[in-house]
Image (cartoon, rainbow, N blue to C red; front, top):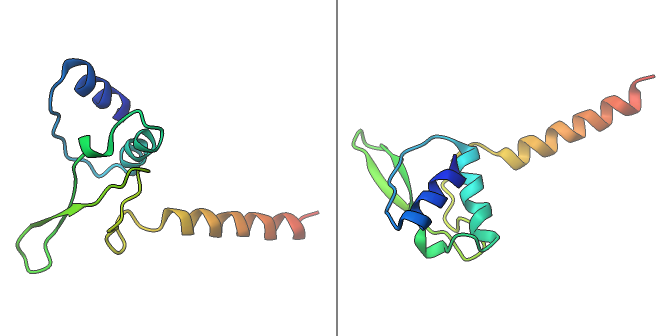
Length: 98
């Protein structure tokens, strides 16, 4: 879906605004920036939070490599940590399995 949005924006020269909770979509956008298929300055990302009952938008800072400099705490969970822990559990289980 991210690639469809990127292609539409580039080829049709339009601004696309969308809201999503999809980690996959965000990761693909970050990847396209890292691959230089999409300029970082062409992407605006925001994190919405309501710490005091009122929604607030926090701009996320995307660098030239597709990394978010000010990643909010617990934003999208801890995908890397979960992947690492799952792999460690697999290795442990494989060592003890016949």
